[in-house]
Image 1 (cartoon, rainbow, N blue to C red):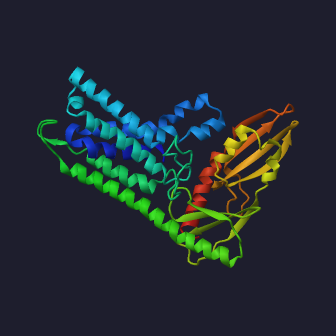
Image 2: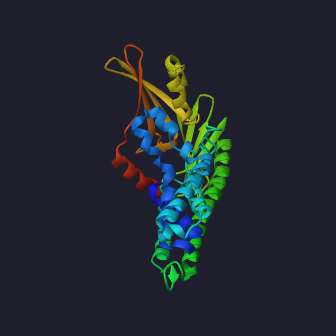
Image 3: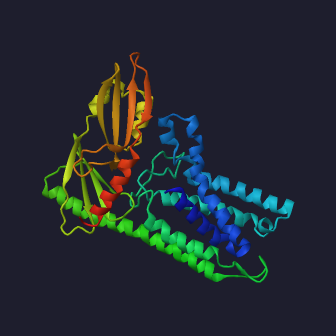
Length: 356
């Protein structure tokens, strides 16, 4: 999820674990803990695009990382509290600090697993990115109500009487738990909606005599109403959309050829193999020649298309380019998107999500 959402969730975790001990400081350090996994982006300047794609949401989003780092941070904060007699540090034990950082980091990874990209939570024992694909990476319907309740709790006094020594204001915990409950219910509704639309998609595939190998269903940007179904066949993919607010249960599909054979000249290159692991088998290939160089275009189908998505004519959101020079050397890059098209796409998707 986006950084703001992870800060909100981390701050909520901090309040529930440590609010009774250190008041508003708990939200601060919970937000820090909830941000730590996404610091993996700091390595991006030192990685090429293939390494960057494989590194993101791997080690620093894993259970192992949270298990190893949280006691180290717990020891550090406990030591600082003992050495420098800082009130907000010394009020907390080693185990409470460890719990705050562990749950702040691990809930970050759990939330990311609901999105489309995939989170390698069992890394390095497994390189597979787990993803339910039931909420978009930015969803204001998840974040804003949660944020409002968190801010409401934040501006209530944490203690009655003297700071840290007075009785804790239980209304803060109630508001935060309510925010956790609302946001978790939203995630649950995403899972339920996905199951509902899967049955509709399966009925349509059967009615349209589409013989498929597998399919992948994901929500579209900023909502859990409109869903995209990517269906793999022997030679290509079908892409269709359905909203839970649609009056009828029909889905129209656009078709895309795989064209995987176009990669035959470079398929044995190790970097190419690593790049092809990213879309998890949902990709198409195109080639062209520019200035004497051959360019292989790999379209990741999991994230849909920009303007023209209704008819299957738009550029794909995630597209990777492999350029082969005259000496056979390969260079890799990610195609940049036009953000104006992205804003236009959101408006179109919302209209379609409402059943239009």
